[in-house]
Amino acid sequence: MKSADVAVVGGGVVGCAVAFYAARERLSVVLLERDAIGTHASGVAAGMLTPLAEAHGADDVLPLGLESLALFPELVAELRERSGIDANFVRSGVLRVAASSAQVESLRARARRLAAHGAEWIDGGAARAREPELAGSIAGALWSPLEAHIEGDLLTAAFAGAAQGLGARIECGAPVLALLRDASGARVRGVRTPAGDWPARWVVLATGPWAGLEGAGLAVPAPVTPVRGQIAALRPAKLLLDSVVRGADAYLVPRRDGRVLVGATEERVGFDRRVTAEGLRSLLAAAPALVPALADACFEAAAAGLRPVTPDGLPLLGPAPGLEGLVLALGHSRNGILLSAITGQLVADLVSGKALPAAARAFRPDRF
Image (cartoon, rainbow, N blue to C red; front, side, top):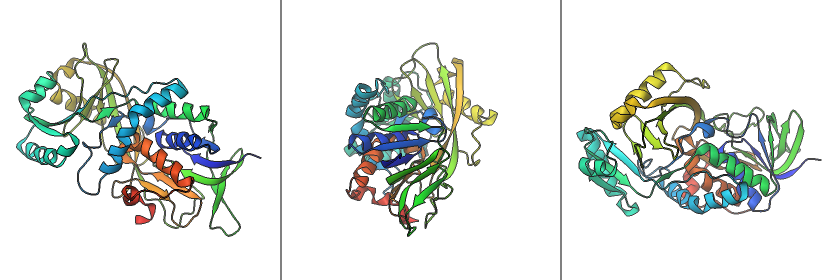
């Protein structure tokens, strides 16, 4: 009979990270993915590892974001050794640029608040000295040398490959139809698929925006909705950027092969994953406003993914309300790549009998 200590539902970056960390704890793991590994948002993400750029207030992802970022250098090396896949971690730093007086004041204040993490305000001349192709209209920037970027599709594949190398079983084309429960109905004991049942001591839902799994029957339904993000890839005639550049309307992420990723829209259009003319228009207008030379870059590709977003923008991480044996790892919004490492580690700890740390309490699923 098929069985596992942990059944992970969902093969995006978070589900694959959970499978890797759980397998590394010597737990038997099966990962069940309806489509293919990294098919959805994880496969098209720009891969920014930018907890400071995402920090907007007291109730944000900063503490765990910083902890997760610190894991990546050694993690990527381990994943490369175990899977043969290099996810291309680059400690590029991030320039969060300002073009208006209001943006200048906002970023100056943020730089003061984040100074302990190496962030600083630099004027427009210093920003262009660091990135000479920046537009002359940029008045200054919050410079954050700590932050980085990675290739999300490669990271997802590396997590999956490393998990398999540690004995995890990965089944694609395996939709989960329902949760299996014990006689009392109060504890989950596995999942049902079209190919049969998978008994498991723990089930982890890492299903992105598809949180309303049929048959889950949570006492408190997971409040996760999809937000479409469209992204474009441009290829300039020469290398233009070393750092990630973030403006008010777009971000630019340089790739080692010379491409520049431009993202990303935020659209509440349900489960519509189409790339649209309006979405591309907005991205292709915003890119040269930051780096004028991108107006002459070749257009290579565009894609769209669905980010899983909760009402307060924070993930759902921890035991599911009303059902023992079920863990939620959902709702990471635009921080799925960044938080994948710490989420995988924390879920593996949780199913191994350890409590979640205080920094994760704001992510408790029963807060809604």
